Image (cartoon, rainbow, N blue to C red; front, side, top):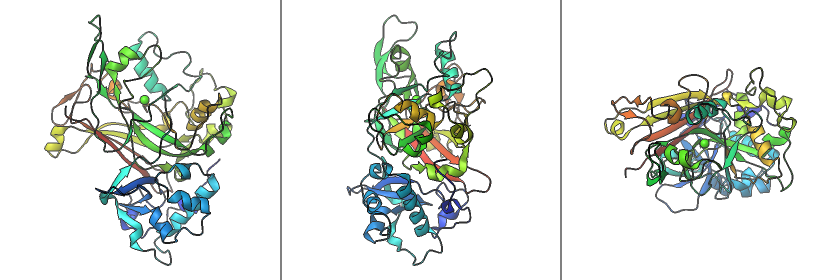
Amino acid sequence: MTYTINATHNPNLRSWVELANQPNTDFPIQNLPFGVFRRQDSLETPRIGVAIGDKILDLARCYQLSLLSELPEQVQIACTAPNLNLLMGMEITPRLALRHRLSQLLQADTQPHPPAEILISMSNAELLLPASIGDYTDFYASIFHASNVGKLFRPDNPLLPNYKYVPIAYHGRASSIVPSDTAIKRPSGQIKPPADSVPKFAPSQMLDYELEVGFFVGLGNQPGEPIHIDQAEAHIFGLCLVNDWSARDIQAWEYQPLGPFLAKSFATTISPWVVTLEALTPFRCPAFSRPEGDPQPLTYLSSPSDRSLGGINITLEVWISSAQMQQQGIQPWLLSRGSFQQMYWTLAQMLTHHASNGCNLRPGDLLASGTVSGAEVGSQGCLLEITQRGSQPITLPTGEIRKFLADGDEVILRGYCESAGYNRIGFGECRGRILNC
Ligand code: CA
């Protein structure tokens, strides 16, 4: 495998940052996810940080204090950049050297004890997009989501014949990717209710979220040079949570024959912390086991090591909080809980397929998995599936009814990994609230 267990995953490691040692934290010393921040209400240049408990380790400050001076110069320079692109584009060896150094700096017994000024409180920081995202591609890798949605739109023909051969995707819009906590404006567009003969232009009445996992390209490839599946993970830097906001009424009218366009391109929210593949090593698992009778992937998408460890065991949750719930102090309400293990295609298969025609991927490109839905009731990753396109509304704790999202609703995605013998790590939250019109 590209990534292996090492001393940074040791469950006995403790940090001098107190809250990083709590069993339920998303950010123990074994995680060390990267993000980009600036002090709240400041206009200072964004800086790279690493989440640790309730604090952010400021890498530019570490560099200024010569705390990174043993690392290769290219790593030191990358740590002082205003985004993660340079770090993402590095080979695995210098990336691993940085992870080991960060782990060492934050360990409880490290000597000499680093100065407190290398930390800032998360509550005093604004978290920004982690990378300059050149291109964004959204896959469709859950066969359960594809089948459920297919049934709603094409009852006679839910799963198209290419699905089990091709990791289906469309090119998304990079310009409207926003960090967690950005308010989302309800889009308007062409909508054609079934009973009408012509469309109208109006605000979407079927606004939805999609729970997805995103992965950032690390090392790029040259145009015309595909990536072998056994090399694919060396080209992936890390993962985040993605909410692919979707206007179902606009989508239903526009999607044929070329796929989603304005139903999706108005906004995509991502969580601010990028959890590296190194950090996820203890949570790897076999790829989805194809049922008897399904075709095997074509050779270029097939690899024994990807089959045995190409999956990642991430528990994914969606919570909702309506404006009324917020006013009444009612806690967010769980909409779904599922696992990333149930995806039909692995990250390596998606990336390999993307580059298989010679398409060049660049550091900081974002690829997303598509809606993560499982086979079980309660594991569907969007309202379209949960409410069966609005025909089975859900009731919130306030008695409010939802077919799709209402103004003022906040959607919160959470993700975390657990494995016997290792510390739990998490992704933090991906939040977005629909603005009141
Ligand atoms: Ca999607």
